[in-house]
Image 1 (cartoon, one colour):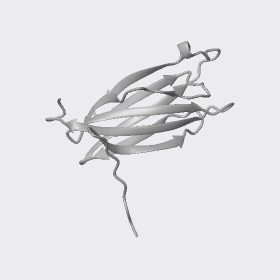
Image 2 (cartoon, one colour):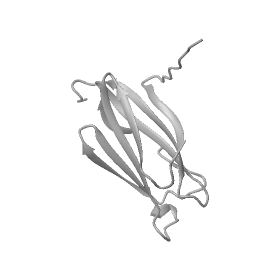
Image 3 (cartoon, one colour):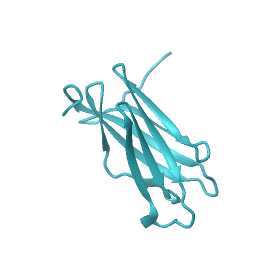
Length: 130
């Protein structure tokens, strides 16, 4: 018996959700597909020596091309995890708004991270514009 699960809220559909453990400190790539459009989001983690406080934690977002971007997370070394409070707008895919939420947990004494992620599809857009 085959089945599927569709997760929805009042204003969005979940495109993809899950968790994974990074392979050490290597960059991870999340490849999304929706309505024959593809977007790749790279996640890179950098632990800077001696920077362990909440104020040292930061992220950068770089667009690498029309269908590719990278988040670089610096000093995400908290045992309680770090996360965003609101979905982040990444643009659009398949004429729908695309949002990203995450929670990142540090694995004690390991360069690996535990990443929880959700990509939401929002309202329809015309040709990738709101």
